[in-house]
Image (cartoon, rainbow, N blue to C red; front, side, top):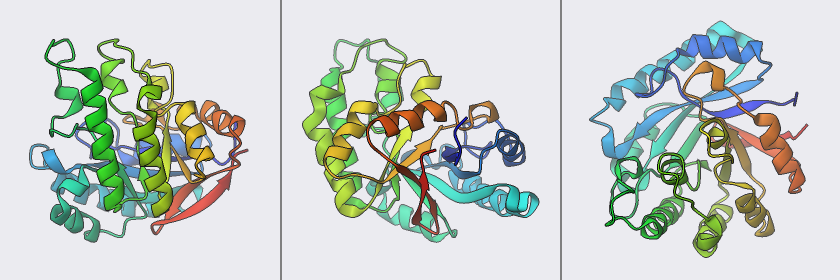
Length: 271
């Protein structure tokens, strides 16, 4: 088993799709030898009202503060948020980020450039062109990276979860390499991290999101700042396949990964 396990993408039952309480997640993390977690409950700006995310996020912040008292030095608990489509709602995002002393902000995109949420697109429809959706998604990712009010870009290549995971339509990221590298250059320019998300392994995609090729491109471009996230929505998914993820990074020449404290990266050796 690897050491220095820090999971920077964890959802509690304060996320609309989360299952377990923060107390149970923390108990399981300690039992599994995880040194720290970032609680990153959802705040998707485009559907915040639909899922009462203002109330949920306030509860998440309260629960993190309470869990820190309960778990003391046995587990580091970073206060985080997964901020979806934040650049499209800058005023709303400013209010969210000013509302709590966050350690870590995950930037996420779940839509294409027409505003359609990827999970709501019917990819069996002859009117839907996969390449256009992918290109639109990467354009929105680039816009968000230029906005830059986050710490790590989560699950780059997210549409694969739906297109391949649900519809079994293959997606080759090499076809979008130029667009992806533009996103990676902007991350590097702004000093932002790229998340290695192991959720794809858990969801039957057979690969991390993004996959090894993207981390090879990132490193070739000079990128070094990487966070690890299981995207856990239940306790048994904490630090899922982190041994695999850390071996992947090591094989590509990375020596460290990061977690965030007070919006600043703390580097941990891959061991």
